[in-house]
Image 1 (tube, rainbow, N blue to C red):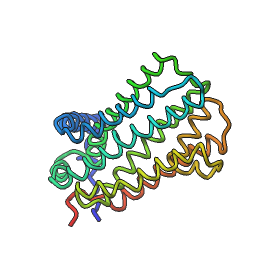
Image 2: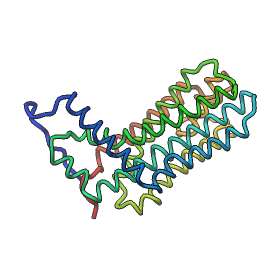
Image 3: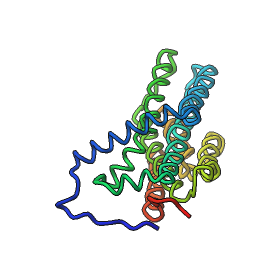
Image 4: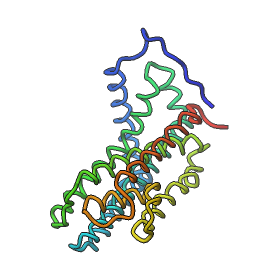
Length: 254
């Protein structure tokens, strides 16, 4: 387990300096993602192709819109954020990139923020593209759109922290193909079960919470409550943060 070094206040980098360093790291990560065909396909092409398939099957009913939005958000979060961030963190740790950054003046928070910002930008860009397409296709708009915003924020937060937690427990990039499967299975499994199983406790899973929040946005019948679903996403985020604090390593695992 890595130890945390306390930096004296006099030498601690300012918020502005940390933000600038995080932006530099994020730009570097975006360029590296663009150069990696495998990462680029898994983070952008595959989710967008899936979204195109789902949208092609779109109907004008509110129930159809709910299912479509839930599936698109989940796939974007899993592939653009979770898989990309997990693989990136493990790879950067193995090639000592994280260690070199940490040996300088960049804070731990700025390093993680910079590395995680790249997949987050990909996710937001994809969501913006699909949102524009949905508007153009005249898909029914939600009557309470703020619940969709809560779903997006909660899904992003839980996916990012799940990525750092998974990276903490993954020895190398090859193992990430296996170590990421449990979270993916939980998200997709609960997403599919959400409309079929009438139980408020399903809101304690990421997929079930997203289904409930999107259904709440469209004012449809709910088995649980949007507040309980929000708490579920917050719980997964907290678990990811706690595991990261306990087990994340900045140097290669042996």
